[in-house]
Image (tube, rainbow, N blue to C red; front, side, top):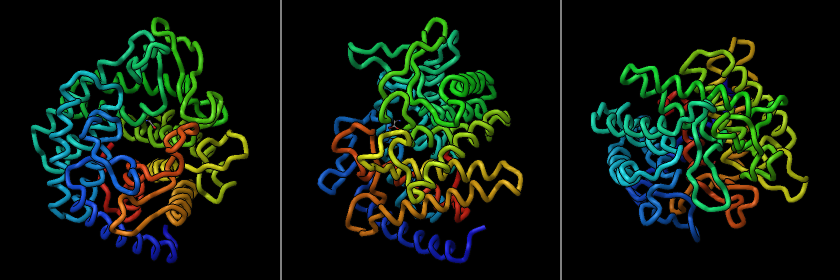
Length: 378
Ligand code: GLY
């Protein structure tokens, strides 16, 4: 379905990714990168080992290992996986166990069959399942890290990307409870987070005893009524994945609805998403990570819709990926990180339009999907 011009672009990009990742794996190895400081990655294992993004580097390494067979990627990914035993066994994780261990232990198990990695993945799934609120039918997002906010009842859209860990656990041990929890959470997210027009809240504070909506806390978008583009991307990909793992049609419909909203918005900004689609016109701020993640989600949707619908999602993904990569990629092998233009949050001063490790992860996954060289980490 790629045009000849886009196929040429894709082949060139894949060559550049291999050159860049080959240099990065030699330089970074099993250190854990996040956002470069003064152009260089700092190692997150030095003091921030439990940070939610620490699985994306091993995720990139396993994707590269799968696509190229180069053992350097495997060795570095195995090193990170062992380091992540500290937060896995440390008892202070939040809902991000999916991001952390799907990309490390579970990816390892899927590609190598390593039983120790499978045990880590099951342990991570148990932690995630333990955050389930049975009356509210949702997975609690964050712990309480300050006195101002009691987050016991908070549900966030990002968690749609963590629950594939639960689908995997049910597949592994044949116990439906993990999948049941994941589906209850997805149902609640669909009802309480996705708006009628296809946009999404980021955070919804629910009453932890009843599950009723209490309020919409300040979030990573412009304001609680905004439309944070990475949150919309989490919804697109997350609901598409829940459909893949369950076959429940409503999930695919939700993914499509948010995708339509996303495509309508990026069409107004040259196929590169703003940080928040509902923010004031100025300042103009982009988030490349939203483009890369949404592209993966749209490519997933394209696999599940009838033939006549495929081009909308497939071409939408390609156009977004290409425009965002042409605007923000740095292919210098000596420079840390590939995709610039990522934004942590609308109000995160100093972390606006910067390279972020998950931008690189989703960009590589999207390119490998287009080449037919990816494997499903989720
Ligand atoms: N999951 C946090 C974020 O997307 O920034």
